[in-house]
Image 1 (cartoon, chains in turn green, yellow):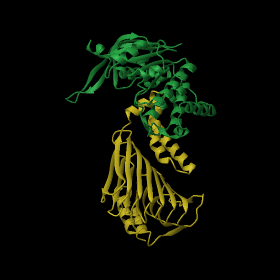
Image 2: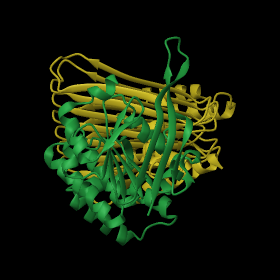
Image 3: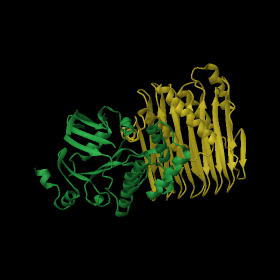
Image 4: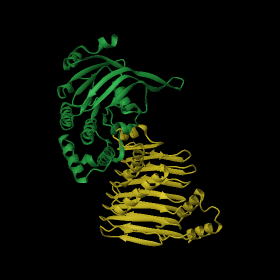
Amino acid sequence: MSKLVIRGLHASVLVKADNGDEVAKEILKGVDLEVESGKVYAIMGPNGSGKSTLAYTLAGHPKYVVTSGTAELDGKDLLQMTVDERAKSGLFLAMQYPIEVPGVSVTNFLRTAKTALDGKAPQVREFIKDLNSNMQSLKMDKKFANRSLNEGFSGGEKKRNEILQLKMLQPKIAILDETDSGLDVDALKIVSKGVNDARKTTDLGVLLITHYYRILDYITPDEVFVFADGKVVDKGDAGLAKRLEETGYDKYVDA
Amino acid sequence: MILEKALQSDAETGTTRYTPESAHALLEIISTYSPTSTPKTSVQVTETSNVPIRLQNTAQYAPQIVLNSQKVTVSDDVHCDIILQHTGAGDEAECIDFQIGKNATVNVISTQMKDENAMFVGKHTATIGENSEFNHTVISLSGKVLRLDLEAKFAGKNASIVAKGAYFAKAKEHLEHHINVLHNMPNCKSDVKYNGVAEDKGTHIVWIANALIEPTAFGTNTFVRNKNLVLTKGAIVDSVPNLEILTGDIQGAGHASSTGRFDDEQLFYLESRGISETDAKKMIVESFFEEILTGVADKGIVSSVREYVVKTFEERTK
């Protein structure tokens, strides 16, 4: 049983001002959120409301600076940890735009990550068996294992590769940053099934960031949060997400 | 022999021996000394074989200077692997001319792992026959001054060349690679891709590639690219991709060059999966070589390059 607790989180991004100086622009303005294992939380909100900033801030991207507030995973202060230490404590971020790393194969990447997370190299046969079955269930061609990480992958292939990592690395809490964007219905079903499978086997807690209701048809949320202007402004059940699909975010943005 | 004399006198005076300029001067001499007309040795490859042909150098000891001038003729329909490994403390000047027939596949790998005070300068020329494939891979890892030029042209249509290279320059080494591809025949392809890593003040990388598409070379497809990773301040990289297109009727032509430090986004991606910063950086350095080693058949070479790269990087981060 794991728990991610976020209290009063403020974070800024460094942007270049007109005069060339780097200035901090506040994006997160006091986020309060709790994510428990075994449950699914959807975060919905308009463009520019800070959803992705929340995801990257928790994962420790150097571009974002936390100015106040706390984020703890099972009582341990995430914000004091390096990026790899956050992963080792059980946090996973499925990125909206996975990065291409030419010359690093998917297999080599996953084996290195697994070794780092477990503190020892995985058994070769077990690892390959695991990799093959997970790739098969995500309908990824075997050839992907030897291809350079994300290089030349289509948008859908990149997202499947993120979920492959989620299944192989078995984190406690996963943040899915717009994993549904750019996916056709078939790919959306495959990716959603991947997430649900991971939940079944590891009691994973999921923070699912999305613009659209449609992924929630496949991954049922326990709670839905509305994000606007850098903080949570409303919460409810799946019904809230459905209503947002019709009404949009206007009432939160104008408020 | 003109070249041998030049090298000898060069060694005697010792004044310009270990400079990039002397490498240039040697290359000038090599250029006038054509292996096509007066090769020291001549190799005829008339049959396909699984066993690679090794054109070994003998410049193991300083102040030994070795000239290697060879003509390699590959017959029609032959598939062959040619391995050149340049090692040791002696200086070397090398001139190799590849004459490739029709429907042939020729894979050449040339590794430069000279002792730290040794110099290597080489020129490879290739004439590629109709429907033939020429794969030329260069790995330059150590030596005071290394320079290797590749000049390729086609003798018939539908032929292709893949010219790949990777280098690791450090400790004031001068590593220079020139690649010239002359597209003189229709529907030929060329793919030039060099990756490099540089560290330490006074280290100098020069990379110059030229793809010239002549008016007769319609249907040409070419891409020329170079990327360099700079690990420390003070290393100098000169990267010059050239493209000259004299016909509009081509399939594609592109060139790209980038030189910079570690990519923050790539490091973040790797680290976000639990990989430490040091290991992530090591993976990126290795990746520059892995991209080039793909397709190199000789397992011994691949593992010795990997070992060298990891060792060199780890020594640095100690």
